[in-house]
Length: 338
Image 1 (tube, rainbow, N blue to C red):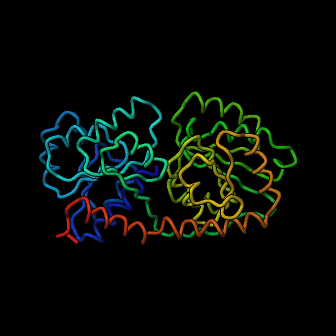
Image 2: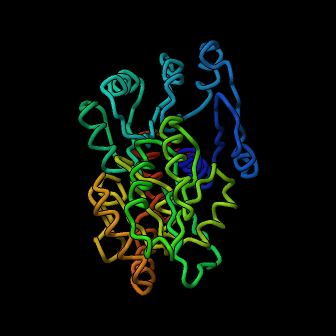
Image 3: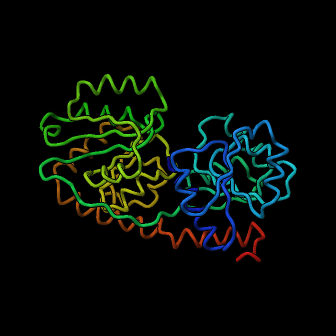
């Protein structure tokens, strides 16, 4: 998912810019474990972390800076009693009052809150008004994909976890409402891990009546790049989403994006110029936008090319590295390491 990918980018940046040792402490390994190890970034896997807090605390106390990545509730109790500066890089928007309460409690051991988007920053400032808070938009190293888009068939993809927050159901409803003529010259892809079994079952049943819809499970990143290579349009139908990495990749690859106005990335969009916006949860408008871009190949190319500039101006590694340096200087008291 997005958070571990951005954690890898951050770890590499800290290692190169601070010229110091970076270690990842995690409760579990996973598919990206080798990516960290290939970069010379060791992982300490502490699967009993919640039950061995004193031992974990001793490990943490060896370091000069702790960055808590996204939601790591079990880790905050370990940080109590340590003297290491702590930055919490928050990638999530919290939907419930109980989650916001946990944020307030967790922030007691945090020196600075880092918000991945203005959507998150506003929420954090309201929840923790006495805590230092600053933006840190992630950076991504530039990649290229082969252009394998097909003439005569427009591929429209929704990439992300299958759940209500990501608007998977809204995307399927929009496909259902398209005219047969439009559907005959398009194919639609949903790809991502299932987070909501009930919603997935509903989507699967509805998809059985849509031969142009292909629903796939999560795939390795190399395969995902192959999907981008074949895709003309990327849709983000999220009801709320701080800064979805799939949209950033779509901009990077000059693919036209149709975006909900409730996502953090919408702040960079000039509607109809470098991407296309629709009001969150307004399926009828989403249908209109999909029909419009399927019918206009020149629009897809033109807006896709302009969208590439969103990546270059806001998600480049240069701007990200500058943000990371500011954090180290201003909040982590690590001047001697730079």
